[in-house]
Image: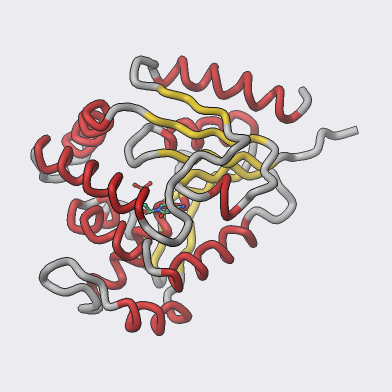
Length: 231
Ligand code: DC
C-alpha cells in the first residue's frame, strides 16, 4: 500500500532558512513546495505598482482589499526544479525579493482581508496533502491539522547575515545595516499584528538553526519527516 501523503507546515521568523529547508525537503520526498511569503510579497508588489502604498509606507487597506479578486498569483516550475512567482502573468520572482517589497510586505500582510484571501488559496493548494508550505501561520491558521509542524528560529544577526549574503549573490543592492533593520522591523510587525501573528503552534517542533549548516538542517528535517509520515 502506498504511504499516505502528509502535510508539512514550516513556520518561523524572516530569513530563518525555512524556505531553503522546506524546498529541499519537498524535492527529496517528491512533494509540492509552496512559499507562502512569496504570495504576500506578490500582493505587496501589486500594491506598490498601483500606488496603494503612501510615502510613509502605509498601505491603503481598502484599495488593496477591493483589488484582491483581480490579483492573480501563480507559481511556474522552472527546468531546474525551482519555482518562480508569477503575478498577473508576469514572472516577478526577483522583483519580490527587493528591499522595497521587503519593506512594504509586513504591513500588507497585516491587512485582515489579504490574510483571509491568501489563507483560502493556500488551504486549497494543500488539499490531499503531499505539500510542504513555509510561512508564519501555516501550522496555526492554514494547516492546523498538519502531521508535521516545525517552528524555525535563529538570532536576528544570523538571519540578517544570511539575507545580506543572498542579496549580494543575486546582485540586489542593500547594506548589512539596512537588512538588519528590516529583519528587526519585520519581526516586530509579524509578531505583534492582531490577525494570525507569528507564534509557535503548540504541537510544532522548535528548531534553532543558528549554528547548523543547511546539510545538517536537511538531515534533521528528514528524520522528523520520516517519523511523522510513519516511514
Ligand atoms: O517569508 P518572507 O520573508 O518572504 O515573508 C514575507 C512577509 O510576509 C513577512 O513579513 C511576513 C508575511 N507572511 C505572513 O504574514 N504569513 C505567511 N504565511 C507568510 C509570510
